Image (cartoon, rainbow, N blue to C red; front, side, top):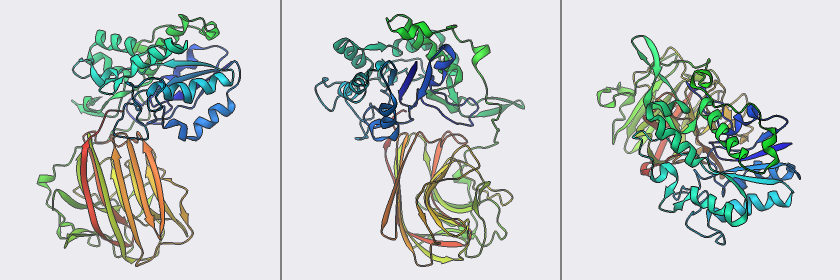
Length: 483
């Protein structure tokens, strides 16, 4: 027997290096099932509407067969009315193509039934409330309708099995209170208290579960299955309530980083970093042979960033770079865009420039070690004899390069246009280079591992490339919606 899973981040697989990493609850189902293969195709950041655009959607319905089960778990991102690609309304009737019910029924239930598979809908787990006030969007009751209620209604209207996870997680969290309920959730980092590591309360992820929370929700889901007539319930084994002392597991590979958000009001940059303008600053960090050959400054509304000699590399073990940046509270949406022109370039590998969103920043430049923090780069990076366009780093020392390759280095005089749009847990990246446009969307990208309070948006360059940035736009566009 097979159980296919489609859904959002609350069900999906992750590979974090958090203190208590993220786990979707579908990753824990197999621990309670005997003779059932769980095929988890859920993806972070998706809604019932947007998931159909991913290869995992086609893969699911290409592979699913008669007698298989399909777990459908959406809701968190369908609520995002600021994102047309993901939003569907819970207020509208099943017959309306813009409704949440329509999307769930027509995109998932009907295709499953046509294949002879058995659909199971789960309602979304609640978000964690710091104040223990469980109402509104925390329980998915929004101005565009109640997403929990819409799924229950759909189950009745079309005689589909719906497992309610909203009310059980709501009751659990209210009973436990915030200080105990948070132990079900991912926790990014630690702080030092009296020389010992303790949970950094500011880094608790109020949406995503940790391994203990995922196992608990899997337990609640299968308790719901026991109350159905589905044959699946006969494959449930050892359904015991998870216990904090046994199932709350800290990441053994977590590395504590001594870091505090920089106080930029106290920053006094040297002559090459005189960029203080509209809360925009210049700095450099990493390993540099000549710290006097580092530039990140403003002149006549243009920004000049980089090195004129071969100095500081972008590589797997970490980055050395010059950057002009703005510190932005992590709860805000924003856009950063700029035109770039290469003024000088030494034609060497591991050179890079563009714009990026970073997890952290260092204002008192550390020239002794590369920085291997998380970031998304709308930028260009050179390899042995080629250039990659758009890359990132997340919880690893490896760079994740997109498959956009030019089989030569960029050149002096080359121009490019860069744009990054942050919209909640979605980061959209756009690069135009030599008349070709490149795009990439990142969902639930980890930009709070080191600094949970801020995101750093900047113009950067490294290793022998010196760049003029013009038409630079840093614009706050609103408050980010919860994951």
